[in-house]
Length: 145
Image (tube, rainbow, N blue to C red; front, side, top):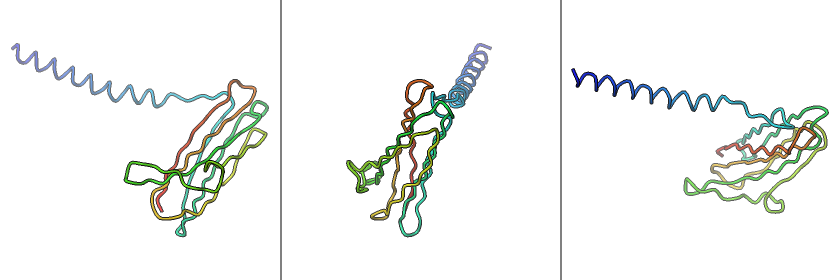
């Protein structure tokens, strides 16, 4: 009798831990990130068969609230499976920068990759406006050529 109670208790405790380990992260993941001056920000990268990488950047702010959008982009190449090395893209510090006054931003950065491999593009948007402190949003996308 005592053995069956112990087994049942252990089983219930295990089930509770399992449910909590799934439910809590799902709840946290579904929590919406809110920004002061930004509705949405995205980055999408593609590479063609010739090795031309295209990074499409889109930011949408609030009309009448968002005043300026600044963009910084850099590209890294993976080596030894775990390390990343900054790619020379011909800009100071190998960081391409752009900015626009207004509440929306859409641009594409094109670059001819020097060799085959896995590349990671990182873009940081700084969105300023009257909605509060600046939103600093970092997006990353990885492509293989």
